[in-house]
Length: 305
Image 1 (tube, rainbow, N blue to C red):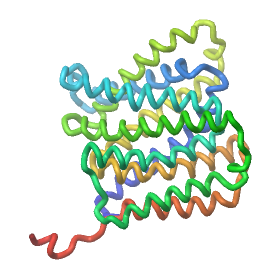
Image 2 (image 1 turned 45 degrees about the vertical axis):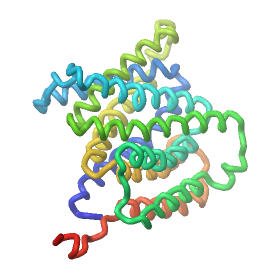
Image 3 (image 1 turned 180 degrees about the vertical axis):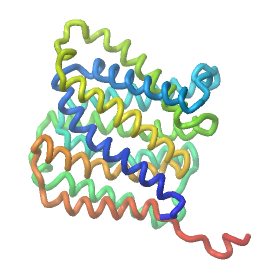
Image 4 (image 1 turned 180 degrees about the horizontal axis):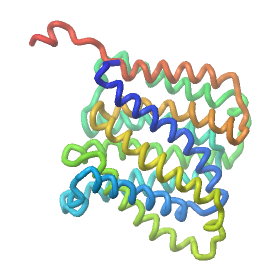
């Protein structure tokens, strides 16, 4: 790994820890309130923080109203905020936090595919794609043999829904990279999150939130705040900064850490079962991410064309 990229790798690791915790948080909160209501308050909090930060940092709030940017914000808000958010929260009503986070291990594959199609983005060396195979193998090990044998239809439905969310996230990453050619990651996140919050707010009406008792539940607000602040505001911003600086493929590779942290937090906080395969998976995931993000030194011929 190149030293110049270490700060972005550090930011990505912070985002991955937050995202690993999101699966536990989502599993808790979907038992308290319906998904559209959760999504609205989550992204309303995040949108507020993005706009305030943009204002404090003397960024261009006017860019959020620029006609040329509105199309990009609509795409970002529809795919990665509303689309992914709906599938994420709906899927978590059926499956477990550990299995949901494990499905996130498929994300680097979808991110890489969209990056190659849209941006013609490739890894420096062909052998680096071995990292995806290792990371995928790590995901399988994190699942554990007993988890694979413990088949339940509701788990299968939830996992397939979340897999659809991972596909949307891969598209979202590439749309974000294209958008950030013209505006900053902060502006891109602010615009997309505002659109997502509006879409969730509209859909929330059908859940009749005025009849819900969850608004007096401390667990509801604490988990919504975590999803809005740590997962969306901090996590999304750090992720998109890295996508802009080191590319969607390398940044997406770090998402292989989400199953590791998600399974660990599920074990500690929800007392979900622990398997020896988790340790094997951890080593494979770390190895895979290391290979994907390895920066081969330039040859003398490359340095002196």
